[in-house]
Image (cartoon, rainbow, N blue to C red):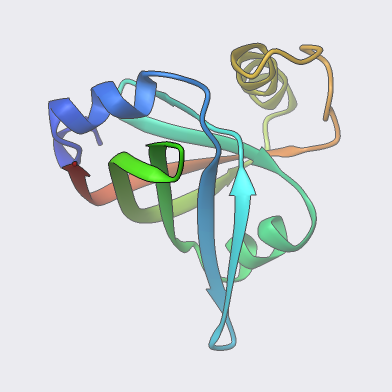
Length: 129
């Protein structure tokens, strides 16, 4: 997994708690939604529910992007494309949900109803400005 993401892009993904955007598509209807995420050791994890989760279950091909900007001027952006897997293990989901929540500074047990989605990155692009 990590081989698909250049080391400089990995550093950017791990750098700070930014909001990413997950893109899914079912029945030729794209859906893009903001998500919190955790990127570690070549794995991108999100926890989610609702339409995003339903879309991933129907079509695991996804894209994810994150951008850092200052006053609306981009500093860098990373885009990942890959295959999502819904992780049905409650303990793994609880652990990753806690990690993501801690990264974003909220109660570690918030959003306990969410389901873990792990994205196997197939390709990545990044740019610094």
